[in-house]
Structure formats: structure tokens, C-alpha cells
Length: 189
Image (cartoon, rainbow, N blue to C red; front, side, top):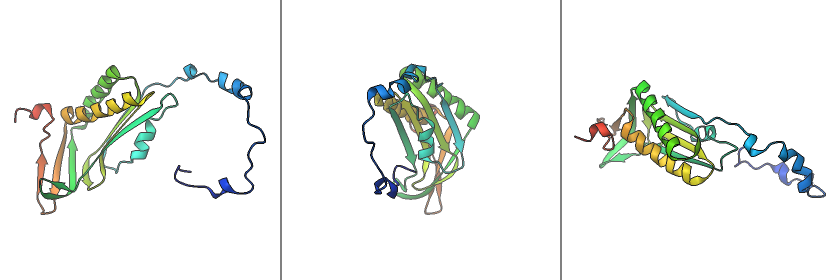
């Protein structure tokens, strides 16, 4: 059941509250057997390029950890306009082996700068209609500051370093490959 669904059984007359609250001592044996330090979970970097529609929920769920109190997510979507032109979709191309390698470097940089647990970077390839996600980045950490800063760094670095090309397709049956002003190899243009 999702968190948005409400079960009618939760409010039914048959639902009974416990006659007494469990004491701390009652739960102590359960808790002591599973100390937080005993939980071993290797950090994960999950990178994917796909022509399929991205699911923000699925990507964010990939980074959830019992060791973390924060999951920060960035979602980049196709907007319907650019410089007065009506945009109907974007088309992305990438040199995937190099792009994956650059994203691995970004993940490594993030881990050097912030204490994060898991990182997921997903990017669409091919046509991405208006309002659909082209990029989803999710990062988990023990506290919010690290994951928020890491997500911001990840999208800025992705746009500056990763070989992904974007073509805007306009309503007027025209299109234009877009130069990424943040990209280091385009800085001299």
C-alpha cells in the first residue's frame, strides 16, 4: 500500500489498541540484537542511460538506506519553451561508455566531499516529451545537508563534464542542437 492510500480497515470497529503500551524493557532484547553499527551496507553508485520513461519514485527508492535520514532528489524535465519558441520535445544522445565513466568520476568526487551512502544517476536518451524527466539524480546520507549539496554538485558536474548532447524540437517543425554553456569543452565558443 502506498503512503497515499488509506485503508478503511484502519478505522474499523474491529481495530483494537493494545491494552498496555510495551515497555522499553520489552523491546530491549530485540533492539540490542541489531545494533546500528552491525548493519553492513556497501555504498552503491547506480548509473543508467535508457530510452525508457524515468520513474522518480523507483530511482529515489534505489538509494534508501536504514542508515540514512535523508534522500535528496533532482529531477530535470523538458520544458515547453526556449527563447520564445514552443518546444515539443528534447532528443538526447550520448557516448555512453565515456558518459558512464565521467559519472563514475562525479560519484567518486561526491564521496570525497560529503559523507553520502548511495548515489543514483539516471538519464534518458532519445525523445523526451514536455514535462517528462530527462534526468533523475538521487543521493542518500545520514543528514540532509550532505545529500542536498551532493545532488546540486552532481547535476552541475553532469552538465559540465558528461558527453550528452541535447536537441530541442520545436512546434514549427524545426530543431536545434543546444550548446551546453556549462560544458568545459565548449567554453571557448
